[in-house]
Length: 147
Image (cartoon, rainbow, N blue to C red; front, side, top):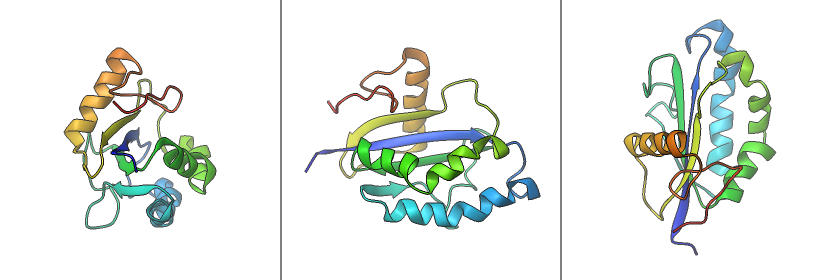
């Protein structure tokens, strides 16, 4: 068993307020998609409030959503994101979210059992934005091994 796990953060700027009818199709899928993640092979943890999701967390403004989770490895996260029902939401993303002009997603290795905080995730995202993919902050396109 590895002594490292994979943390991920991604952010999205909403086109509409979370309670706007134009977001209702997205909001209606949240519980199912979160339950799918919770049950996915390799899933460890996800950021959420007592409501069971992260829509109430004001990370970079009320017009944005944040998603942060921990997985056993890159393959587990990749399978959930791109080969499960989650991928259907990805194809519909432009209906609900603005096109991001800067990097909005980052991966990094953490010690097994560590739960990352949002400020840690922010530092990793800033690192990726400033330096590009490296051992401290990377993407699915350029993965680095744990150090």
